[in-house]
Each structure stands twice: as C-alpha cells, then as structure tokens.
Amino acid sequence: MNQIDWNRVLDLFVYNQDEPLLFTSGLFLFAFLIFLFFYQFTYRRNGLRVVYVTLFSLYFYYKASGYHVLILAAATLFNFYLAKFMDRRTTKKGRKTFLVCGLVADFGCLAYMKYTNFFIETISRISSASIEPLDLLLPLGISFYTYQVAGYLIDVYRKDVKAAASLADFAFFVTFFPKLLVGPLTRTKEFMPQVRSAIEITREGIGRGLFLIVCGLVKKMIIADYISFNFVDRVFDDPAKFSGIENLMAVYGYALQIYCDFSGYTDMAIGVALFIGYRLPINFNSPYQSMNIAEFWRRWHISLSTWFRDYLYIPLGGNRCNAFRQCFNIMATMLVCGLWHGASWNFVFWGFLHGLGLIVHKVFRENVTMKENGLVRLLSIILTFNFVSFGWIFFRADTFQTAFDVLKQIAGSFQGQLLMPLVAGYKTVFIIMAAGYILHFLPGRLEEWGKQVVVRMPLVLQSLFLAGAIWLIVQFKSSAIQPFIYLQF
Image (tube, rainbow, N blue to C red):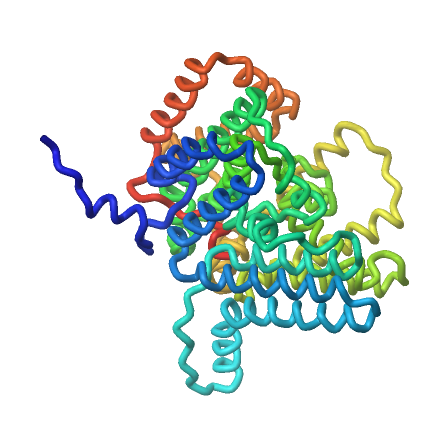
C-alpha cells in the first residue's frame, strides 16, 4: 500500500521562492482544480463566495510571493478604512487631506520597496561614494495593486464611486487572484459591482475561458519562452558576439516575446476569471497593427495606459491647455510610465522615447494632412512597429552599454548575407516567430470564430482540446519555468 508523502503535501502550503505559484506551473493546475471543486458549493451564496475566493487569493499570493502577503493585507486594510473616513468628510479640504495621506502612504511604500536601491546606486555614481544597497526583495505585483488602490482612493475622492461597503468586498476587489500579480488593472466602477452580483457559470463562459487559457499558455510557453531561451537571450547577453542581422532578428524576436509573454498572462487571467463567472477588461488589441504610436498605446497594456490617462495626464491638464503644456503633460506621463516599469534609467529612457514619439505624432497630425490608402496604412504600420521595436532594445537590455552594443552591431556590422544561414541554424525559432507574427496580424473575427468553436464543443472535445494543448506545450517547453516578464514590475 502506498504511503502518503507528507512532505509533498506540506509543499502545497509552504512558500518556495524557487517554485512560485504561477499560471504556468503544475501546482497551480492542481490547486485550481481543488478550488473549482469547492467553488461549485459556494458560488451561489454571495457572502460565502466572496470569503472563499478571497482566502484562495491570499493563499495564491502567499505561494507566489511569501510573507509579502502581509504587505498586501496591510495595504488592503489601510486603504479600506482610509476611504471610509474620506467618504464621510463633507468638505473638499477634508477629503483631499485623506486622499493625499493615502496616496503618500501607498506610493511611499512602493517607492521604498522598488526604487530605494535605484536612488542609492544613482547617488553612488554621481558622488563616487560607496553606499551599500539595501537587502530588499520586491513583492510580486506591488506596482499593480498599488495603482489599483490608488485609483480607488481617487474615485472615492471624486465621488465617482462610494467607498466599499465591507472589508470583505474590498479585499476581494484588491486580491482577486487572476489579475493580482500582472493585471489587468481593474477599475472600481467596473469590477466592484461584480463582487456581490449573482454569478452564473455558463457554457459560453467556460468555453471562452478555456479558449483564452489555451491561447495564453501557447503564447507564453511555446512562443515567448522558446524564442527567448533559444535565441533572444543569447544575443542580448553579449550582442558584440553576433552580427547586426542577428541582433536585428533578436530585437524583432523580443518584440514578439514580450507581447506573447504579457498578453499570454492576460489571456489566462481573463480565462480563469470567466471560468468562475467574472469579467476582466481586455488588455491588448493587436498592438503591432497600430498605424501610429498613439494608436499603439490605445492597443497595448490598455488598462495601464487608460489609468495614466485618467489619473495623471488629464489631471495635469491633458490637451486642454497650450501646445507647450500639452507636450509637457505627454512627456511627464510617459516618464512616469517608464519608471512604473522598473527602477532603471533604461526604463526612464524608454518612457522618454515613447513620450517623444507621441509628441512628434501630435505635431505631425496637427500640421500635415495625408490621404489614407492601403500603401500609407502599410507604411505607417511598418514605421510604428520599428519605432516600438527600437524602444524595446532599451527595455530589454540590462544596461545602456548593452543597448548601444546592439545598435552598434546593427549599424556597423549588419552582414545581411548571413540571414539565410541564420534562419537555417535557428529553423524552429524562426518558424515559431513567423507563426506568432502571422497569428498576431490575423483579423480579430477569426479569434471570435475560434472562441465559438470551443464554446460549441461537447465537454469531451473541450477536454481533448486542453489535453492536446498541454501535450504540445510539453514538447516545446524549456527545462525550467520562465517567469513572466511583467512579474518584475
């Protein structure tokens, strides 16, 4: 008779930094199946469902980020009670005092955890002083849930929404596990009404959810991880060892990798939420089909770009002021956006590039009239894609020197004749890259058709669809799970 391996059972409840609980881990599949089994007994009772999902969300975060769950819990408690007190203030001055206190506390905690060592390193370089960095481990998802609770406080201050009725409801809103680590960022007025609403588990929702989960797994584990592990990382680790054409292909590879990595997580998050009856906002809409950089930001990381638009760009004055001030507002917003992504001057410069691109596009649009046709649209898409890819060089490179090495090789040692030998040597990588870009540029109606096909499948075929996808993933997956890129933010 087989004995129970209690050490393996204990692993389910103990945080392991080397094996965080992520959507792509086998442990998550096991834990989620257990969650679904008990969920069927709780989802019809609103109060019980809220508590059950919140407890699982806290477990999920603990298994992903360890004792940082205490910071998440503290942020939840602090913002819940501060919003309640603010909501009771009758004067604008009183409400603003609570708002400022809340934002200073929230962003102060984020700044300490995320940017302290960045400032220490910057000061050390400028002053030539030797200052030891602090031993800080960034809590997973802290940028996402900090911006979410900050948006909630601003909404309550503006009286766009009422403060959450109960701590349980607010905790559910903040910690909801599908979007907790990497988003999408949810707005109070869009998500909070779902917390206490009656939940319906429908065949439509399950079919769509399954389709999105499989799409997300394929994007992440077949496309993003494979081209990263087998090509992109090799080039960016030492660009000077590779020709210009190899560096350029690595840049295009990274453009596809970061899209599939991030949108893959979002697909899985939306799919998991649909499985249990909740709706999360769309976060990507074929961004590389954009004809200009402004359109790119309407299609890329939509929940973050709209957050910055509504809570930073418009309060700064938006486009309701003179031309110089409008340009300043755009640049300030994109610099903050760059810093949001990481504590590095590379990210600041990446934000500057996008701010500059948005300003140039704005000036061009206001002063030049072009007749739009098929050729203009094609050239606009190519130009925008290459500008975005140029920016990804600084986003991906660990240092400015690495980014400059990539550009130096592309400009000074291109060696275009090596393209065919390169494709032959990395045949599978380039087949996957080509397939990824082709899928990206397919019309959106084909994705909707695919969802409907899965929805109409009987349960047996849906199970085979999932099993087939998992088998395919196993054939391509690298030896170790590759973390999602946006987990570092």
